[in-house]
Length: 101
Image 1 (cartoon, one colour):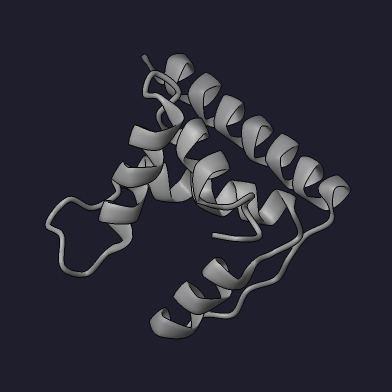
Image 2 (cartoon, rainbow, N blue to C red; image 1 turned 180 degrees about the vertical axis):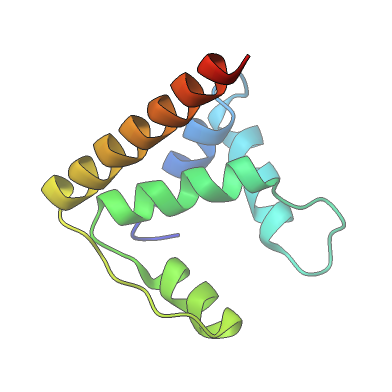
């Protein structure tokens, strides 16, 4: 949480409509094992992105270890290139589907 900016900064980004104190309290509760309120997948992903933007990939590395996977951190250029390729392949698949109709 620290690498993502700390509880208050992260909470403000998760729930901008709440005041800072309420948002921070909500985040602390969601992180506590004693509380039933938990973060949704989109909220977890935002925290991971904030941490990654700060150079911390420990959440992803933990998840990979738990799932028996290996993580390869890409440079921004590599990530952009892979995303562009994935979009191109998706467009080609869509074109192929349209031609078959």
